[in-house]
Structure formats: C-alpha cells, structure tokens
Length: 346
Image (cartoon, rainbow, N blue to C red; front, top):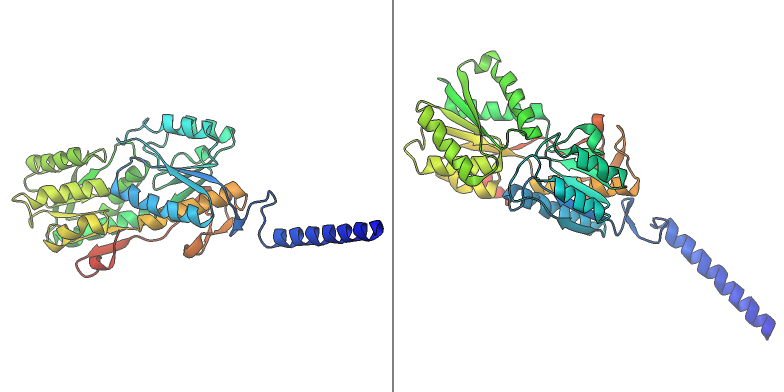
C-alpha cells in the first residue's frame, strides 16, 4: 500500500511538472506572469505629459491606459499643470523612486529633463519619449507622431490654400519656446516657405503661448494688433489653435484672417463649421498614446532595446519597427475639414 502511494505521488508530480511546462510554452514570462505579444504582465507604466488637463494629452492618456490594460499592467499619469522647461523634473525623480518600470514622457525641453531621466535610467527605469523628444541619449525609444518634414509640408500647404493665391503676411503661434517638436516643425516650415511656390507668403512673426489658453488668446490678439494686415496664422499646438480660433471668431477678423495648425476634431468642430477655420491637421493622439504604451511594455519586457531594426506588436495597430536613433513612427497626419470632421470623435 505504501509502495502504491509512493508511485501515485510520483505520477502526480510528473503530471504537474508537465502541465507547468505546457503553460510556460503558451505564454509565461519566466517569472510566473502572463505575457501579451511578448509583454510581461504587472508592469508599472507612468505617463508624464507636458501638461495635465490638456485635451491633447488627455486623449493620448486614454490610448495609453487602454494599451496598458490590454497587457495587464498598471497605468498612471502625473505631471505639471503648466508647461515649462523644468516643471517635469520633480515628477521624474518621484516616479523613479517609486520603482516605475517605464516613464513615458513628452518633453517640454530637450535638455532640461535629461539629467533626471539619465538618473532614472541608471536606477533601472526605462524611458520612452512621445510627442516631443529629448536628446537621444536621455531615453531608450522615441515614439514620433509624424516626421517634422511631413508636418511642416502639411502646415504650409494648408495655410497657402487658406490664404489664397495673393499670399500675404503670416505668423506662427507656437507652444513653449523650448518645445523640441515645435522648434523642429518651425524650422522645417521656414525651409518649406523658401520654396518658389510659396514666395508670396511672408512669415513676419513667431510668438509663444506656452500651451496656456489665456496667454495663447492674448498672443493671437497681439499679432493682429501689431500686424492688422496679417493674412494667416499657423498654430501647431492644440491649445494655441483653439485659443486663436476663439479670438478670431469673436473679432472683426473672422473670415479675413486664415487659421490652421494642429488641433483635435472635438475642440475645432464648431470653428470649422462656422468658417473660422477651413482646415487643420493632426494625427490621432489616442493612437499615439496607445503606441507609446506598447513600446514601453516591449522595452520593459526585453522584446526591444531601442536598437534600429527591433520589431514589436502594438495591439490593434499591428507591427512596428524601431528606426534610426531609437525612433518609432506612428504615421502621417490627417487633414480635417467640413467634409470629414464629423467622422472623428477625439
């Protein structure tokens, strides 16, 4: 009887070990957690936008939270209420002290947060930048919404069409003076404006609203006070374009001064329908946040390292490849106008 019991227990042990091996083959991360597309469960992913309570970053966070939920991680979001170069440093320090697996950050300044990010990386935290990059050495991967060249071409084409064949003076209403992405786009816009086909457009000013609604409104107002013959404004920031649209809508310049830039359909819908703005562009910020979260999960799981040629699957968006300098590209921006704006809800 004792011998029979021993045999039975041995048999059960073999069956149990076989079952564990089969479970591991079907999706174990080696540490007992499940995996989704090679991403470990239980990862702590923290989003740090340029500014909280900003509609653009709220949409990006919605996408990020959905992705983290899909691979069974823990999502959080924190950040400053005002977009300024050094405002994100203390948040980075706190997140790294909390053993966050990945910080997903949109940089207000490419230099100001590098020290804090480098220290976080030395402690084992991975860093993904999205929307606005830092220096490449300060992060592991950059998830870019679109190429600077693509955005610049889109913006200049839109303002040229809105102003018309006669051309005239135009101005740029940007976010912060240190924003990496804004500055890259503006430089590319200047290059684009130098082409013969845009010779009748004259860029007379670039002003900064600091991604603050009231300041952006005042900067738009100030542009028209200084340049009453201004023909168009480009505002490549969601806060700025909405504030400029609100100013133009209530002024004598409505219908006389063209407006374009980067905005969300929900915030710009009324301005498009009443003629304040004919067309503007943007990528889908929810998809940007979603992709950034999956890049973060893949990075923390060792699926990618940020090396050129690395591949990972980003849920419903499919497979992506890491490009030069650790960059992952979401895709081209979409143009929104009266013909299609009601098809989008973000």
